[in-house]
Structures are given as C-alpha cells and as structure tokens.
Length: 341
Image (tube, rainbow, N blue to C red; front, side, top):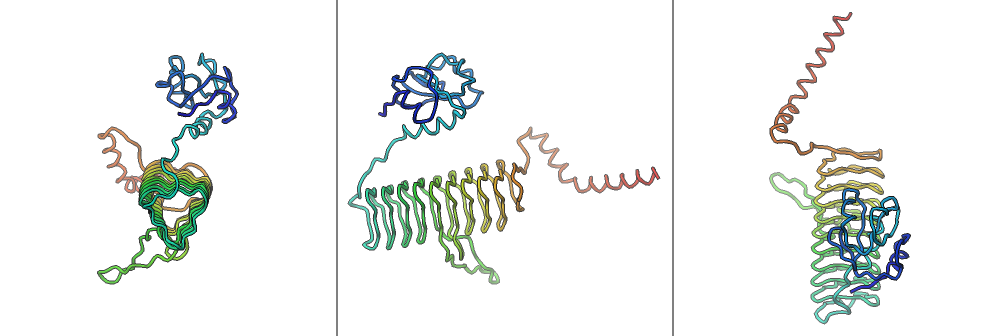
C-alpha cells in the first residue's frame, strides 16, 4: 500500500495545501465513499453537495469551493488534472518481472535492459524492444516490429509484422495492431484481395484501448501521432492518419485514408467515412456520421437526440417530407412575390 503525506502530494500535483502537511493518505476515492486515509476531488459542481458529508482526509478542489469543505484542501485551478496526476501515484504495478522461461524470443531479436516478458509471449524475428518494455502474457510481436522505451503491452495483444510503437505507450488487452486493411477489388461475382503492404507507425505517449484495431496501410503506413488516446473497441482503417494529441472514444470507426488533424476529439459511436480530411481542433459529438471533410475547428454533430418515442416517430415522418415541404414553401414565396408586385 502506498503512503504519501499531503505535503508530498501538494508538491507532486502543484497544489496549494490548506491543512497539515504531515497528514498521511493511502489512496483515492469518490467524495461519497472516501475514508479519512483517502484523498478525493471535486471537478464537477454537480457533486459539491457531497463535500459537507464526505469523510475524505483531503479534497483536491478549486479555491472558490474551499470553504465548502471543513477538512484538508489541495487547491488547484484544474482539480481534474490534479486528480489525474495523483491517480498515477496509486496505480498498481506490474505483477511480473524479467523474462519468463516460457517466453519465446527469436535469436535475431534485440532486447533492451530491464525488459519484462510474461509467460507465453512471442517475440518474432528482427524485433527491437527498448529499455524497460513490459509485455503481458500471451502477447505477440511480429517480425521487424519495434517497441520504444518504457512502453507497456498488456496480455493477449497482437502486433503484426512491421509495426513501430513509440516510447511510453500503453496498449491494452485484446488490441490488434497491423492486421490487414479492408481492401478488395471486384472481379465479376468474386472479390480479389489487395495485399496490404504498408505498416503502422505509432508515436510516443499513445494509449490504445482494449479490443481496438489499427489496420496496416495498403501501400503507405497508417500513422498514429504523438500523444493520441484511443478508447476501447475503436476501428482505425488502413492509411488513416491521426494528428498529435487527438482523442477518440469507444466504438468509433474511421474508414480508410481519412486524416484527422491535431487536438481533435471524436466522441463515442461515431462513424467517419473514407478519404476525408478533418482539420486541427475538430470536435465531433457522440453518434455522429461524418461524410465530408471539415476544415474549420469547432464542434460538429449529426443525428437526433433521444426523445419520447411517439414524438420521435412524428418527427421522423416529417423529416421524410422535408423535400416536399421545401418545394411547397418555395412555391408560396414565388406566389407571395407575384402578389406583391
């Protein structure tokens, strides 16, 4: 169990401490469930009412809310960022170390120092693993692939051949990187497969969620930029390029050869069709379908929100009548103009 004093925590997250710097804590919890040996946080004012009854030993919060909590306060302009930094101090560490005797490492592979390979891992020909790389049970790294220093690969991950992963990345269980893109040419009633000859390049500080797939390029590479964050069950098709610091939520699919700029956010269950370009700072809300390129930064949405079923059915019927209604409106405008003249 990790023990930290509030003074040490304040220094770690850059907070101003109001309280006893020597007060010890051992973990994090929500305002509602925290005990006196735990730290909590307030980042959403919806939960401010819980401050009065919270038993937390200390709370990370904005100075404007400090008067609402009687205990120790860690004051920050961005409490959620402080919580994120503090959470890393209490994260569990890997439960394996060294190279397990059941790991298969090809003799041509280059292995850095302090590398951890769990049971059942397979490291293929001419693979390069940097220092302090950790690879979980039953994961596979294909030929001519490389993984940078300090990257953690969880259990049951597959990296195909010619995949380059940067430093300090996290790849969660079940991710598949470098599988063939969906490429076929029609030949009468049949389909002829297009061999996928490119690779995948992933920058530093990237996180890939569980069950996410990143396809290899058809000719050029699929490219994932620096600091990109991908949620669970995201589909990145062949030759997609994601700009630095872009974040994509779960169950979103991006079709082939589409390019996203830097600092984009794509919410959950979105679909982005192929061969598009989305510029820097584009934000797409949940369950949107993107069918054309977007050059200007800002928030974009499509579809309709949840509504009472009877009302939704009426509106859906009217949606089908929009073209007819527009034509009737145009005719009425022409008639009004004629009468006014």
